[in-house]
Image 1 (spheres, rainbow, N blue to C red):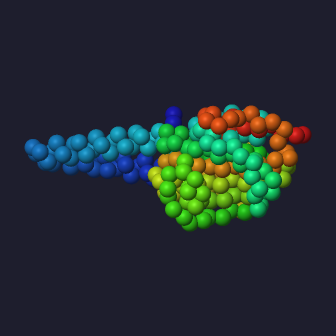
Image 2: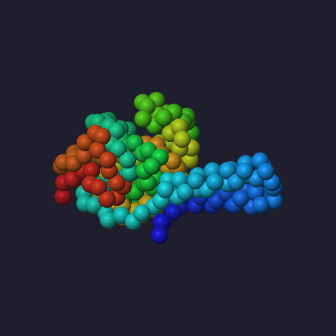
Image 3: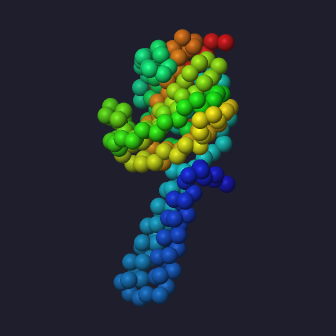
Length: 216
């Protein structure tokens, strides 16, 4: 049985409702209008099936070390000086519309701060997407402060947090949903990383794939 992510079910149900509405209407019409209503019903049914795929939320076996926050492709790995984390490594993951859109904790920790920033909706793979609508989470972990930035893209217009300030989570637990793809940046203290085990263009699964080994 396919599990639907929290925040995705209203979209799936609404699409199915339109499908059945137009299908029902087709029984009370004739000729061209009947064909039109039937085709619209089929269209919404196909959209519903796609939404089920988009909002699927499969179980994951949690990996070791620091695990991936998002499903998708590693877009960039850079050294960075961040105001919140300090000297760190920023790992950017691009989420396409066919990826699972639920994001997960990279390590066990406490959500110290959650901030929503309004912004644009340019494609998430462009540099200008740094000014897009985004949610920033600061997390207190055993290796210090880590930061997750969930960035909305041109299609993804809504970020749905599952957590709030003060929430304590285990590694791999769900932190939120970005509808229909975008980008997620993870900031990790550089002096805590023993080995990076990912590379640019590699495909990863949230919670399951290890992205870095840390010092004990």
